[in-house]
Image 1 (tube, rainbow, N blue to C red):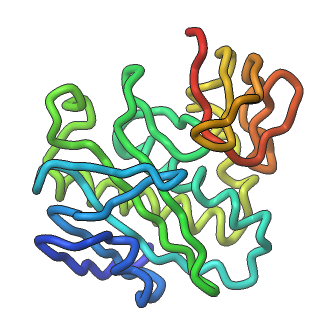
Image 2 (spheres, rainbow, N blue to C red):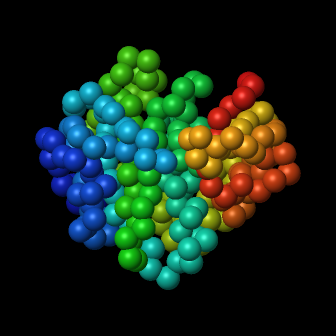
Length: 215
């Protein structure tokens, strides 16, 4: 188990920014962020004190860039297991057809800052269960297990668990590289591949934002 060290603030600009000077095992949390963000620089807004806003520092020394690129899915698995959800490639977690969590990983030398936001307090997301600190404890326990498996044995060690909770598999989707992408990759998702990419109608996609076109 990782010996997590919690650093909490009532208010901060971004827990990911706070984590830039952290070491492996440091966890930065806040009740409120003034400049929280998600994938493609989308804003992550949350009512004060109601949701889990957390950034975790993990060691990735010796891991190749391709291996590090799978870490958002590893973190996604940990969150999905903690809240009873499913992974929406590449970095979201859904419960009951609704997004309940988002993940933003940023490389910092031999460390990766894993930003995790979980909608705990909003009424429509009550299915995640528990108060913020309870959810944080569950996520960190699961993340410790998933990370250790990935660190020691690679993405293959958690791949079957990830595919078992793949939200997009079998759905007709469009993957956009940017917000204004005029030519998204479309097709039926054949699932997350062993290298962390997504198979969309036979095309491997390595980055982007997936949108369900038809359920």
